[in-house]
Structures are given as structure tokens and as C-alpha cells.
Image (tube, rainbow, N blue to C red):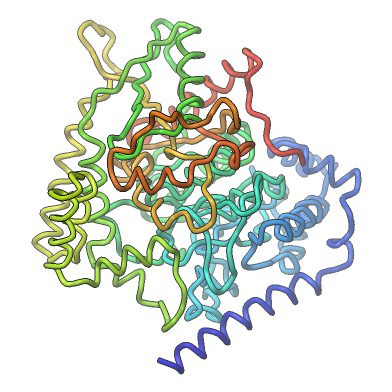
Amino acid sequence: MWFSYLSHRRACRDKQRERAERIASLKPIYHEPLTSQDKDILSRSVSSLVAAVQTSSLSPSDILVAYSKKALQAHAQTNCLTEVMIASAETWASTANKSGPLAGVPVSLKDLVSVKGWDSSMGYSALVGKPMAADGALVRLLRDAGAVPYVKTNVPMTMLSLESTNDVFGSTDNPHKKGYTSGGSSSGEAVLLALGAARLAIGTDVAGSVRAPAHFSGVYSIKSSMYRFLKQGSASSMPGQEGVPATHSPMTRTLEDLETFWRAVFQMKPWNYDYSVLRIPWRDVKLPEDRPIRWGVLWDDGVVTPSPACARALKTVTAILEKNGHEVVTLQCPSPYEGLQIASQLLLADGGKTASKNHRAFESNDAGMISAFRGLRLPYFVMKLYAWYYRYIRRDPIYAGLIDTHYEKTMPEFYALIARREDYRSRWFKVWRDAEVEDRQGDEGVDFILTVPNSLPAVPHGGMRHGWKACGYTFLFNLLDYSAGVMPITHVDATTDVLSRAFRPRNAIERNYYKMYDASAMEGLPIGVQIVGRRLEEERVLEGMKLIERLLKDAGAGYVGLPL
């Protein structure tokens, strides 16, 4: 045990020293202030950068310098970087494919994405100093498309938290407010985007890991459905876990860049790089113009009601849609709480053993996962007594229902959960309007689902001690395997978003999570909304996001992010 602890401390010290030395040893130009050319490069869209490289008016090396300078500044502010690949990226930029759809554009990568010769430790000290043997499928495609990987970013150990902290790299701050989380598990990616230190980023999502950072940090993402986006070759904290699909997904600073990124990846035919990607080309989708689009709103998941700030963002969107002739209805759907019960059991069906496999003695973990894993290790009868206490003494069936099923599953129990998941998905299938049927009389389905990405804006560090139980608004759509996008709408206002004195929490999860809600302290933090489509409808979700953004801009209410 002591040997394990000493090895852990040594690995953490060595990795932090390595990161610092890599930054310090970079050419002096990377430590200089931004030039006017740098600022011009940082202000350009991805399509503009690609066009400039393809016409030789900009070089990939010039673009790399600008984004590397900004990334180092972002890291100094937030502690967001893990692997600083800038020195190697100089060579990659000099040999980049200048005719590719991402010619010369730097791409930031979540720490788990495999780059040959570089660690993907994911915050586990046991994985430090074990570089990947080959590029993953996604990195190979990006290189062929002309993109230049240049940094990797911080994550929570286990990848099961909405904030990033680990002993190897430390905690990552929110780009808008120090002391608050930037989301998780793709937090470092969101930070670089929000601060203008990246235009394109790659995250992963199993319970909201690209959507929560987008919401907390004020950027854009679309979580892909399973088998739509490349993933083979990447590291994982839970290899083989497919009870709740985890997917790699793009994140960007702007909606325009998000569309450019998706189109560029599919122009490269990703199924030729990763056997698991379905052979579905990118489709040009047009939203109907001969009828109102019906938006079904999930106002409350029955576990944690949206805070005044998040509810205001959602109402801002529904109001602008209704004003422009769209139909907004309250979503009639199977119980979201039932989905949370199923998803939480499937994700940790092994009792957390896989995610804990590389965990060393005395190595710290995310506050929420400490609580979750402790519960999984307790004797079954203890958890049953705990659930009985909450159900009958505290009169809290919501929390009791999650405690009651929080234990390692047998194979027959796991199979039963898969069957229950499939039944739940089949019931949700009836929520949707049939887009192919012209006669819509009596069709009560919806075209899109609208909801919050989380009930609160970004919370203070350590907030996931309770917050991990409150991820139902995103976790639900992983269970269903729906395409789901998040876009920023507004910011927390200290006066408008104050919590009513009449508010009374309905259950322990809501009570503990709302202890962190303080509109005054959170003022200025971004707030997003979530737009959800059916499985494998990423193009349609993108069009829904574009429609909302256009209507908001036309009304003079478009989101304003951090200055470059």
C-alpha cells in the first residue's frame, strides 16, 4: 500500500514537472504577447482559416503559433492543459495537408484521445509514462484532413464527473469565474474554446460530458449517437461499458464552426478509418417551411427543478419560437426519473470496479465518485436500510429509489436492465412526430425536444459531491442514444435570477444541489439550452440550433461570449 502511494506521488510530481518543462522549453515566440496577426487569426472562423491556408495567404505554422500562445495563456488562467504537444505540432503543421477540409487548423483533444507517443493518463497516476502506441482513428482522420493536434486537456479521473480534478494535473477553473467548475468530463476542451484558445475540440459524452461543459462554459456541442462518430483507439476509464453509450463528439466556439467541423469529418468518410462508424454520409437537412415546427419542452425532470437562471434561458428560447409562429408544447413522455434509475444502474453495473482498476492507494478522486464508490462497497443490507430510512422516515421516494438499486449487478440482473432499457426506448419512440408523413392530422408527436442541460449554472469546485446525482437532463439522452446539442443563450443575472423564498426542495438531491445556487455569486456565468433530436439526427439538431440562434440574433438577443 505504501509503495503504491509513493509511486503515485512520484508519478504526479514527474508529470507536473514534465508539463512545466515542455512549456518552458518552447521557442520564445510562444511566450510573447499576441501580435496583430495573431489576433486576426484568432478572430477568423474555421472556414476562413482553411480558405487562407488553401490559397497560401496563411501558413499552418502561423496559425499554430497564434493558437498555441492563446492556449498557454488559457492554461495559466485555468490549469486546463495536460499534454503540451506544441513542439511536435510544429513538424505536424509543416507537413499538414494544405488541400484538406481542415487544412492547417489546430485541434484540441480531450486527454483520452490517443496520439502516438503521448500519454492518455486520464488523471490516473498509474497510467503516467505509458504513451500510446498508435494514433487513434480520429487523430488519423484529422491529420489526413489537414488538421494539427497541438494540446490535450484535463479531465476528472474516472470520467464520471461534471468537473475536472485529479492528483496528476490538478483542478481546472471555469473560464468565466475562478473557483467554479468548467464542467466535465470534457472540461479542458470547453475552457480553450471559451477563451478563444481553440476553434475545434474533441470531447466524449456518457452522461453529459460535452454538453455540461458547453453549458457551464458558454460554448457549442452536439453529442452524437452511438456509431456516428469515430472513437476506436482512444483510451477509456471504462472499456467495454456499453450499457449507456459513450460517444466522441465535436465541441466548438461558434455554431458556424460546429457545422464546418461535422461536415469536414464526414467529407473524409470516417467509416474508412473506424469500423464502428455507420456508413451514413452527412445529409443536407431542411426544416419544414409549410407548417409550424413543434417543440416539446421538458420543463422539469421530476428530480431537480431548473434554477431561475436556467429556466429563464429556456423560456427565452420558447418565447422567441412562439413569437415566430412555432408550436411549443409541454413534452408528454415516459418518466425521466425512470430513465435516471435505469441509466445509473447500467453505468455502474460492475460496482465501479472497471473505473477504479487504475486507482492507487490514497489517490484522491472526485468528491461525487468517492460517495458513489463508497456506497457500492457497502454491504447490500446497509444500502437497503439506508433506502428504507429515506423512503419511510424522510418521506423521500426519489432518493430512496436511487439508493435502493445502488449495488453491483449480477449478469442476470444486467441483462434484465438491458431489456428494461430497450422497453424504455420503445416508449420514448412514440414521443416523436413522423417527419415522413404528410397528413399530420392527429399526429401529436414533436419535431424537437427542448430542455435545460443542467438545473444549475456552473457550480463551485467540489460541487459534484452532490451534483453527480443531478445530471438527469443530459444522462437521459445518453440512455436513449439521441443526438443532443447545447448552445449558450444568456448569463446569470444577480437580480433577475434570485431564488424565490417560497422554494422548497422536493427531495435530498434537489436540497443538496440547491445549496450551491447563489445568483449573486454566479452572476455572469453562461447558461445554455439543450436541443434534442432522434437517434442519428445530428444534422437535424444542428439545423434546430441554427434556427434558434438566427431568431435570437434577429431579436437582438444573441449570446455574447468572452472576448478574444
